[in-house]
Image (cartoon, rainbow, N blue to C red; front, side):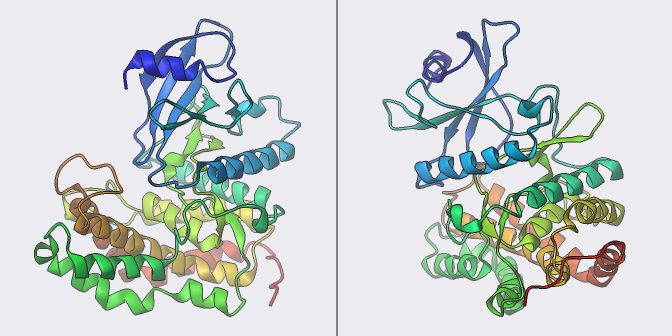
Length: 373
């Protein structure tokens, strides 16, 4: 679809002025995103996104979730003078729907562009890491009083490692892309650890962990920072669903603790940045301690152990199935991602005692919520 067609799609939404230019924006794996400018110089710019309805099967549920969450966040921040720069704002269509379906049955949404911000795929400073922890901690804290029963699952079993491993075993058995023979080392690593990775689900089954509303995709590039690297807004709310706080903590750490890129080809570059871990943990617990239970704090390290492992399972499953889920830049991109995440998982294992000591040291600064069980 060309630029002119995308401009016509932008015209279907209730924007200020007329759209005059549109450019590709961002580097997300799932949705296609465009920056839209209008002929109104003093008006806002917008982000137009094509929603990947192969990944998100029920767009109605997806957008209803986002509306409920952003409305709740906006109510918590009603006194903020620049609320549209702190919370995502969905722009409805001219007939007041949250999304538009084009003539090719593609789904689109529009949001206000949050100006003068930046995001990082790889952190550069401890202050950035601390801001990231504070941002996601605040996000969870502001949603702690929103009933998880009001939010549906946009991707069922998204963070369920038992489900991910079942898919992995199916992919191994079917070997649709005839790639199993080339990844025996990676398969062995995953199989050797699969029985160790159910701790969070086991704690939840025993009633030790409360269900919360969590982000479920806490990569650091899902935080917008201002020019002074202060956290401004948490974005990419497609996967906001009921979950456990260790999921958000573990996935965030997966991205901030790695000294290299998520898909780094040179595995020797994948080492842990412990100072960034300490800074993120400090910021997170400063913001989240007000609602966390002791059991939730004790589950945080399990999330750190789980998420590089689970992400490698997901990448390798997609590779075995012929690259049907993630966008790839070359034929073996998902395998490259798998190997990078497995190396990270191994590094976390080697340093888990040190990481747990940092969590407990930071948690000891606060009086945590009383456990519910």
